[in-house]
Length: 51
Image 1 (cartoon, rainbow, N blue to C red):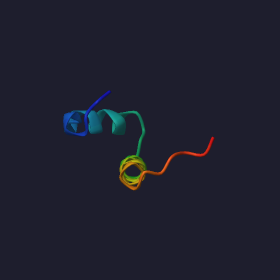
Image 2: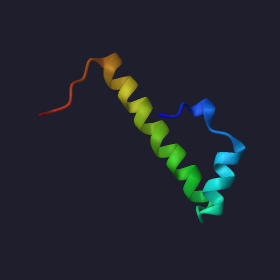
Image 3: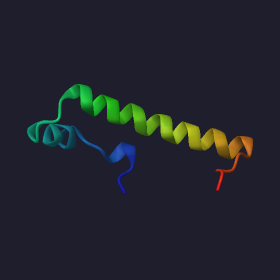
């Protein structure tokens, strides 16, 4: 698994070369960030997923 700090400009250029637009790349970053923050909040609040 890649750490966020290990993603380089070359990685982004490779995504662009495969047809990914800057908008889509930014949306993915946003979704992943929201997921990480939601998970951290749930841990802090002691919330457990419903089974």
